[in-house]
Image 1 (cartoon, rainbow, N blue to C red):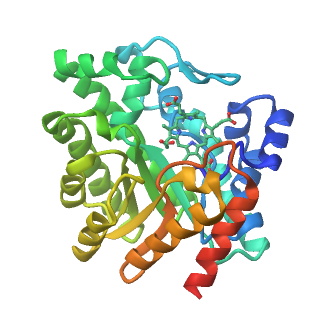
Image 2 (image 1 turned 60 degrees about the vertical axis):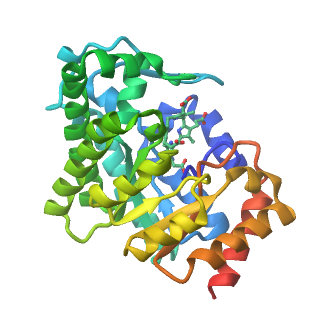
Length: 322
Ligand code: 1CP
């Protein structure tokens, strides 16, 4: 859950050296170093590959760049000109990163640390493709999906196919689990959620399970509200990532149905540190560690977070687990 990034001084240092975000993502030496940075400091049980969900639009042929302090920007979208066949020309350095991370984990004695690959959910990736970047209300993509559901489905299908291939290659290069980040799942009504989140996600899970039956698939339908139950029941995922708004009672119900749950500490608690962090982390551990459970944040680390607070949290979880 964005465990690397700007809260770490060694990340900021490497970013300065690299000159830009994409210069890190597509450079296997740098990207593997960044993946390892939080593991070396805190010995988490899982490492998340350092990359971004927006490499898929770029691989399909849409321009992508990052403006300093402004986040991602994407060029004009022309669905007819996107191409699936050549995506590996862009993505192959990321597979090389996966291989290098596995190698470094082994040589640095982190054999027990699982490597998690990821991509964005097709809906979330399409959101950025249509809006040309982040957005306050994503009204452009929602109106596209509502006015031209067939045209929008073509885009979703293309992203779905690309994402299946991309995750499959990550697994073949050495990822031991994969996560689908559906960060904007919370924007949709029930009908659109079914069409643009549930259906493409099930298609992805089916295809991945066909090829790699033993690799767990984690789904993270952020802010899906009551629709989280449909996501859990209908997509075939093995584990559900919970954002910090999901009540622990809901988490327990999901767990009782046999699903592994992952989450869901509010990153603001990590920013705060001290008692505000410790008390809520303990509540989560006590509520969920009786069943299949992966402790995680309920969203990415906030960039102003002090590294000492991550250390406090990692120590608490390790002492609780042991
Ligand atoms: O140095 C920087 O300025 C870049 C900040 C940054 C980082 C560290 C971005 C830009 N992406 C990442 C890496 C990243 N992104 C990881 C790797 C794991 C790790 O860092 O430990 C992962 C899993 C992501 C996933 C991601 N990217 C999501 C899904 C999760 C979420 O946060 O909801 C999304 C929506 C993105 C798009 C994106 N990339 C970067 C930014 C700032 C954004 C959000 C843009 C926006 O909506 O405004």
